[in-house]
Length: 191
Image 1 (cartoon, rainbow, N blue to C red):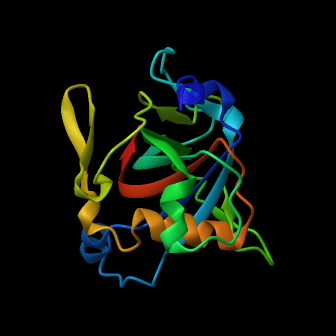
Image 2: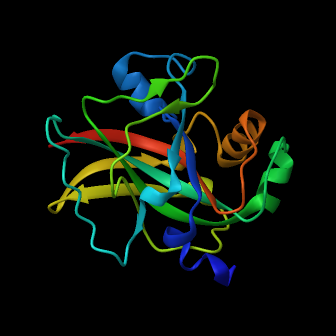
């Protein structure tokens, strides 16, 4: 999997699931099926941890929403696979922060399962590539802004597991090698 060391530069697509944590839905008074949103973003906007990560909010916007994810890097083209086959299609993992403007929510596209979002440079920041995590569902991921923790999520608390997310995303569309599939944590708004 050495070819994935520069994943931030070769990523083709970012797909994922928003609102996948029970604790967030409980806080919002929602159920598991109320607001699962599948999203798709352009891979050209991924920036890696060794690049300067500074996001300028486009003029006229209210600020950013930051969504922390465990990113699953696919190692081969993936279409209509089963949950049991998902592990064979995973090349590794990254921690990803998906950024979008606060006044531009994901927009459902008519006659499509995917929702899309306004794209601007530097909107998906990723950490170092991890080739193998034996039990990723046991991880806790978190993020901090200016030294203050703003998000924390235990992956065991997800509604859809990593294999479930990869399986369902592959049913919706063919996922190509070097796609980043995101299992979402809680979001927080930043200005």
